[in-house]
Length: 387
Length: 184
Image (tube, rainbow over all chains, first blue to last red; front, side, top):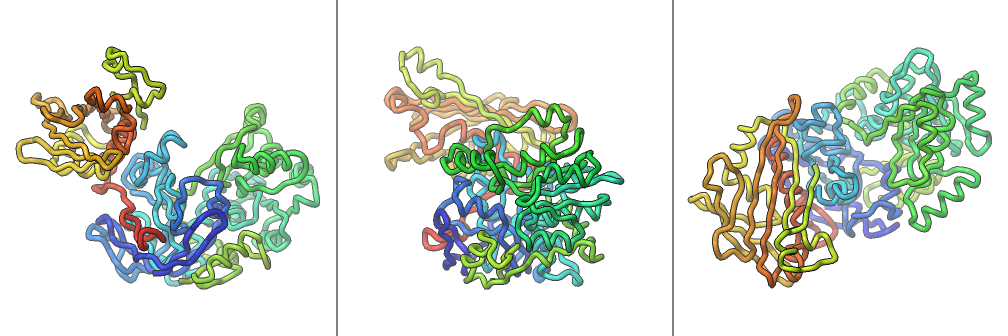
């Protein structure tokens, strides 16, 4: 089959590889319908995450049709149209039982690579380096999905492929970030980042009853998309964000701040310059400008919900958290906990992720799609691949 | 999951000095908690098919009918190390000991104790390797392709996965643009 493969820093190629096989009895093989780029892939492509190997198949956000079923799969059937969260989760362990699916205790085939970095291995991820399990990714014609009865969710007929695609990762990640904010009546939520995850966090906060949502970015087309979803949009290159947020909230500050940017945050001024230099010298992997600004802007006693992917950041302003009494919530997406209700929100028209699919490509044009996505060419929010 | 290593007392008695802690770590342990009763954990461990599955691909283990098993481990420079193990004679003990003639005499000890609350059973695996003098001279870490603490940790990770899901997680073989299109 054909697959989009990582061959080194900024070196993606579509290559011919073997088809995946059923390896364990709870596996299925999916014929990929659609897959999409994710901002977190850029960390792999830019070489900020180690343990990639030349020839690894990328892609962790996808949907498709079940074409082959393992001997112990009981719920999912051949022909089912399904969406799959990006983390492999067993549904049987301590963490899965608490709906902490991205912390699954049993799905990592290479735990010896993860333990030295994090203390304990997380769940495995499709197409996201060997420290996260080394599973072959979904930018391919076919992909193997372990624990299919837990990880495959049947897409209702009235939900389109494009909508289902983003319920694999961007939507559950954003929804979880809003869920972390424990939104109460009158709460104002500020979201840094208007990429796929940020836009979904904004729409989710509205669904959960936020008084209003503020979206922070610098790309006009993304800010326009946030406004279309009902957010108040702020261009951080044009205003003092912290002052603006105070103005918008009667001096209280947002009740919760969601960081949907992560380690490659843009920014302004001396702090940004400092972050860029340290990252360029590999003294640290993260820039962290958005996170620092969110901590400053957040109201006292508020919640900081961190969805952006970070590596190892030094100079973390811990005093801000302590002195302001902030609650910090963070996780990689526990998608299996959220997908059923997200599909219902989509059916009711409350969740509308399909608009993020701004650019469509064949799988063969995958490298071009990533290039447009990375450089945000032509207002690209997400590049979507159809094998 | 935590793995600990401590210095091999024998190495010190022999007056062997090593700069690298890993080199001296002939005794290691790792622990996991498994959400199953001690009886369930014990019977899975005693199933002759279990140890070969959770040790693969670190060691190739062939169980034999008399509660013994033949082990093969790949070593640097194309060498393969062999030994035969037997279960402890005491029925309340779990693990293995090598019989005479092992390339690297070793023991494995599995200890079960109840976890707090309803969290199941805490499972500790202790491994001890007593390489002959010549082999120890090159350092325990260079004896195998995998260091002993990784071996204990990964075996227990796989054991917990097998106990909870009936599967050991794997990615091999799978598609990749190397080795002729398939990662093996």
